[in-house]
Picture (cartoon, helix red, strand yellow):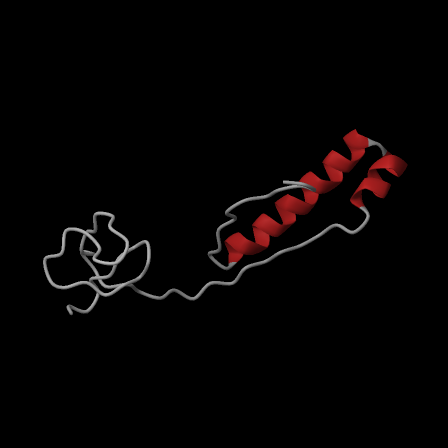
Length: 92
């Protein structure tokens, strides 16, 4: 088996020049580069009782509070060359 030539669906090792997986059947392609590793840090944050806060201060004021929170978080991430991939709210 050639190192790095594996089925992307089932992970089975494949013989050189394979066009299809011998185990599960889909077409395969050799990777141009071997897989690499990257160091990542993931931040998950939750505003506890955000819906209670919204009921107390109103939806518009909560939106302002959350926008400020996101700006502050983004500023810190940018300082350390980080990237914000996504921001979601309850149920998102």
